[in-house]
Image 1 (spheres, rainbow, N blue to C red):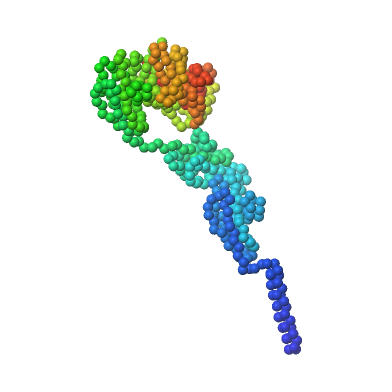
Image 2 (cartoon, rainbow, N blue to C red):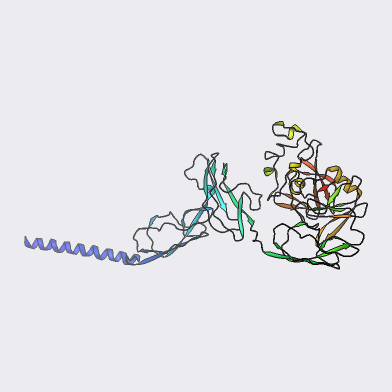
Length: 481
């Protein structure tokens, strides 16, 4: 019996040894080694951020490190062994085993389609673009037709200030920062920027008698800050002081006595003299100079545009009926409509174009809506269509360059002249026909299209008094009597 027991025990040991040897052989044959280590490297594949490589041991299962990469306007979807996503796919944090080193490439999905839980089609994503700025902003989710405030801007741009958002990079500006809006589709909002204005610095105006006698102290200005010139104190026997000029012979930029001006650098002003008592017909009203061109009506024309301090200055464009310039010119921000040219709220003589059929039959700008009156005071105004026709019909015109600025010189019947700088017109943020003069009249176009007003157009291709869209930005040359 003992002999039988010993035989069975020996047989059990033999079987165990056989199994161990067989398994070891199989492992050796397959090339597996539980002690080998492998490294997975993570690639952002268009994203940004840092992830440390991850070490795996042999065939031991282990969860992938959770993704830490980000990509503006995109959401992380999965990992793949090939950058274009055609290789082996792995989910974020998936438990895997590896048998060799490999690189996993992040796969990205645009935010606009990252709505896996939305089965209604009512969830939309607003993506924010710095548009020349720096920084990052998370995309914002909206529910269709539910009003929600936009995320406050977090982008910055050196020497610029954030202005608003728009759906196109070069747009006019649609949404203010933090504005409450409703969204009906995925969209990208681009930051709009305005260039910062440098702080004022001190500059000096020196006065030269230019053949006269007397003394005048230099005058200090702050660059970009409006200020009146010191009254002339020079005299010249047999002559009358007329004005100042930046060049002694009078061929530079000219300024009138005590004119309200803005300058950005130091300069010398030379007294200009006339032996016959000065040019006939020149004068000032409220500190702004005018000249008599000898027109039949006796209308006096300003020597500078509204918003300018010298004849060569372009001044500030305005929409018809508005009194200040702005960043963009379109019906969506025009003062006297409800966002559309067929919803006019003032100056309308055709019910089709008035909001809710509004008609007021106002055909000439009221003083409160006249850029000339509002900016230069009583007595100044935007010329009527008839006055613009009179200028056009009674003056000779010549394309000239004055003070480095292209424009047109209008010479009246008496030989006096004015210079109108060419500066085109503004539509939204864009300047069109920059080599052509576009100037408003105060007269509405009443021939069944009151969304337009009369304007002077003088350029290399066309010259006439025609009409322009009221929402556009044109210049203003004021008149007085």
